[in-house]
Image (cartoon, rainbow, N blue to C red; front, top):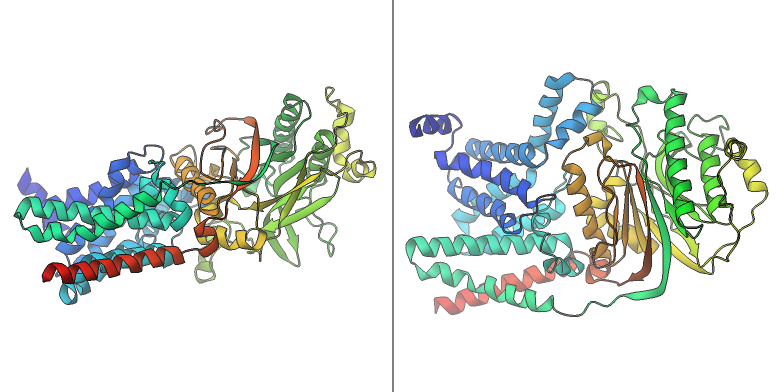
Length: 567
C-alpha cells in the first residue's frame, strides 16, 4: 500500500507520501476552521503546514515549487471553496466539464499569496536563515494585504470563533488575527523541533513570540466603550428568497410580479407586526432584479426604470412612515450602476451609493478577459461607482395614525402610479438623524474598502445588502456572513446584513449578535431594535499602520533578543 502511495507521490513530484497528507490537511483544516464549523484550534494548522512544506521544498526546483503551490491551492479550493464551482456553473454556459475547467483555473490563480510564501523560502533559507520567523511572517502578512484575491479569505478568518480574540480586530483589523495566526504557527513548529531534537535553540526562538503574545493578550482586557444615542431605532429586515434573476427572466412579467409580490407581502407583514412603529426597513440585493426607481433624464423610456418598483417603495414608506433602504439598478450617461438607495419617510428620494468593488466575472468582465463574454452570458455590465454618499435617515418620528387596516386591491393598484402616491404625504421627518454606509454584497469582504468609504461618510451604521443565491444552499453563505461581521468590529459600527436568500443578521459595534439570523432558503423578516452606538477604533482611524507598527516592534524584539541570547 505504501509503495503505491510513494509511486503516486513521485508521479506528483513530491518528496514524500506524507506531503500528500499535508496538502490534503491544508485544505481540510481551512474548511473546518471557517463557518459553519469553526473548530478554533484547527485554524493554526494551515499556515503551519505551509511553512513546513515551504521549508522542505526551498532547495528544490522552481517547477516543484510551482507544483506544490498548485496542489495546495487546489486543496483549499476543493475543500473549503467548492461553492465557487456552483457560481461558475450558474454564470457560465459551458456545461459541467467547462465549469470544472474554469473552477480549476480559478483555483490556480486565486491563491497567489500561498505561492509567494513558498518562493520566498528559497531566499530566506539561503540568505537569512536567522531571520526566518520575522521574514516569513512579514512576507505572509504583506501577501495577505496587498495580493489581489477574487473572493478574499484571510488566515485571520480561520480563528474568529474565539470571540475574545476578535477584540484585536478593532485595533489591527482581520490582518491582526492573521499575524497572530502566523506567530502561533511558528510557536508550534519550534516546540515540535525542540521535542524532536531536544535542542534548546528552538525554545529560545520562541521567546519573542511568547513576549509579544503576552502583551497582545493583556491589551485585549481593556474596556471597550461605545458612544452615541441611547434611543433605540426599530428596524425591519426583509429576506424574500426571490428566485435567481437569470437574464432570460428579465422579460417575463410573471417573474417580476412574483418578486414584487413577495417583497410587498413580507414588508406589509413587518409593518403590521410592528404596529406601524418602524424607523427603517431594509431590502436585500436584487429583491426586485434588473430594475430601479430612477429615470435617466436623457432617456425617459430607459428600460431599467420600473414604475411598479418605484411605486412599491413609495407606498411602503408612506404606509409605514419609515425610511426604506433598497438595492436598485439604474442607467445614467450610458453607464449601468448597481446601487443602494434610500427613500425617506418624508416622501423624498435620498442619496444612492453606487457599488465600487464589482465582482469579476459576476458583475463585469475584466477588459483583459473580454473574450470570455461568450462563456459568461449571465455576467452583468455594471460600471464601478465613485466616492460614497451618506444614506441619511431619521428616527423618533412624530406619532401618526398609520393605515394598518388590511390592504385592499384598489390600494395596491396605486403602486402603478408613484407620482400619485407622492402627491399627498402625511408624514414628517424624525427628530434625530442617522447616517448609513451602504456596502453591496461582497464589498464587505474588503477591510480597506469599508474603511475608505467609512472615512468619507462617517456612518452610524453599515448596511450590507447581499445576494448569495448564485452559489446555492452551500457553506458560502456561512463563510460570507461570518467574514462580514468583522467589518463591524473594525469600524466600531453596527452592521446589518440583509441577504436575498440567507443568511441575514445583525451585529453591534463589538460584533455581538443582535438577532436570531434568518437562515438559508427562508422567506421571512426580522424586527429588532438597535442603538446607534459606535466607537472610532484604532483600525478605523489609522488602518493598517497599527499593524505595521506592531510588526516593526516584533522585528526589533526578535533582533534584540537574538543578540542577547547569542552572547
